[in-house]
Image 1 (cartoon, rainbow, N blue to C red):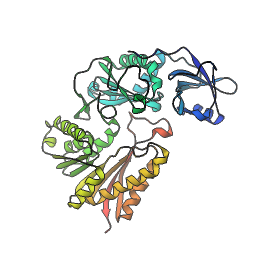
Image 2: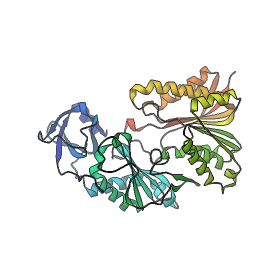
Image 3: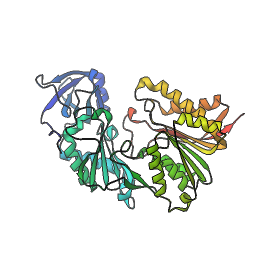
Image 4: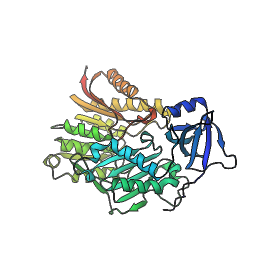
Amino acid sequence: MSTPAASDRRLAVRVTPDALRHVRSGHPWVFEDSITSVGPDDHPGAPGDLAVIFDRDRAFAAIGLYDPDSPIRVRVLHSGAPTRIDAAFWRAAIDRALALRVNFTAAEAAHELGYRIINGENDALPGLVVDRYADVLVVKLYSAVWFPHLAAVTDALLDATGCTGVVLRLARNVQRGETHGLDDGDLLAGHIHDGPVRFREGDLWFAADVRRGQKTGHFLDQRANRLRVGSMSAGLDVLDVFASTGGFSVHAAAGGATSVHAVDVSAPTLAAAEANMALNLHLPAVAGCRFTTQVGDAFDVMAQLADEGRSYDLVIIDPPSFAQRQADAERARRAYARLTQLALPLVRRGGVLVQASCSSRVTSDEFVATVVSTADRAGCTLREIARTGHDVDHPVGFPEGAYLKAGFWSVDRRR
């Protein structure tokens, strides 16, 4: 591995009283404008240097990873008593994360499952995500601060999990910077077979393109909602919008859906959905389900389906994030309202609408209020069946970490 070695240097960082309060309460980010001084003066700090945050009495408050090129200047690893950041620290952090996921690690045939091991800031490893697909780990970096520590973290992950291979994925902002000779999709350690990695979700099989697929190869965060959809799909006609690689579609088919129509803007993604459906054709329910796909913009396709008089018992809308910044929140709410407007004519009387949001800038209450009020203006009453959030392998450790929310509603038309 060609990454730089972790530096022995320590930066002394002092922050505003407000930032210090946030750090001591467990917030993982220190922003550039919250820092009052960084020393020593002769060393500006490099990505991944360890930054020790002191209070005004020069007592240790926290330690984190320094990033001179990001508005998030320090990503906090630990607060409270002083600690060493070494191989034992990384292993202990990984062990704590695995302990939270005991229902996966202790499950029968656990080595076949797909689940998240490290959920970034929410597992006190900010900017680092690790997903497991069967015996393959996918490490995704959202910050360049991890490059100097990547070898040590990779060793600790292999030791803790016994997996056979580790793949590196890089967020776009990381790809644009210095990557030390590493590319998105590189194999960091061990070996993997050519092609997608097969893994199990519930009793169903999926394949993740861990080297080139979206995110880490599959959207693991919607697992619980997919299982719920599967449990309520018997005998229904289902529309799956923003279908991606077919997670909801396959679960609906396995749950006994009469038909599933999957819509996505990406033809290769829908081809992956068809492949995932094919992995489960040994199940009579899947074999008996009529599965169709349609490539197109979700907004346009839903309008077209309504014009054609099409309708469904269950409509699922799982869009990408519409709000990367707080300034985008209002635009995101308008998009959710438009999706609800387009979906309602497609839901048969007494049918069910499932709509999700993965925009952290829009709260759960704001999202639900947007969907319900839009339906009300359209002459529909939504009766809440369930409101869901993060599954156990996607814990929430700070306010900005809560991004996923979904509602299940039965739709009653007043006119």
